[in-house]
Image (tube, rainbow, N blue to C red):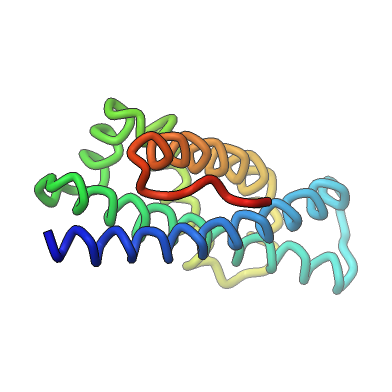
Length: 156
């Protein structure tokens, strides 16, 4: 019981961090949508894309590695590989789509290991698309957590 209390407090703290991360991710998505699709970019636009990919990675990590794993612990479920975890989470309506979460994690890994700036440009359309999917998965998770009364409705 003591561990559940500590894990629930941890979940609430992580959720607050995730909400702040989603807010900045959404602003970057909006900005980058308005500048994407060109053949050349200014330095400031390049920085905007860098910022977007960084925020995408941070938000996806918070969600998949912190929130989902902490929920799993609170449910007293045994450790399972990520692909099994996402499939079970989808069935339990913790997330919207296992496939999209796997795609999100794959893209995050691709971004983390990409060192050529021009290659990042090629990833931007996918980042924009999967950022929407990430936010949709987080929204479904929010409903799950509210139903269980593990978090309170945010005061946006």
